[in-house]
Length: 125
Image (tube, rainbow, N blue to C red):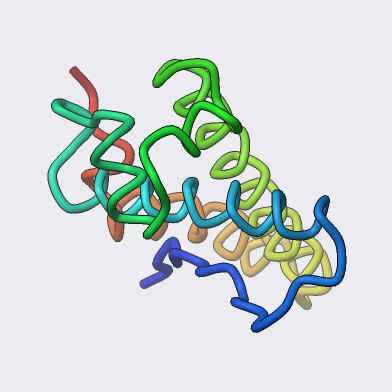
């Protein structure tokens, strides 16, 4: 079954520019939020908790996100971008299938596998 993978940012020992350091910190905050949500849901997800999980100071969170809602929007965008990339890749593979039945099976399998493999991410209610 397909799994949505939590991609950790690559940690460089010395970022070469301030913008790279900021991008790395933002990625660490997003990865930390994703881990916390997958571990226990978005209830109780606080900026201080995300910052602590990312290994940064609490105030650093607000240098990257104005609020928890903005963090959730950025996280959702990243997750759906990743999902679109994966489904697009699988769709291209399905189009190369030898017959119509195989194509249909290959096109419908990935979304079902993704939903089944990550019920906490795609829960309703």
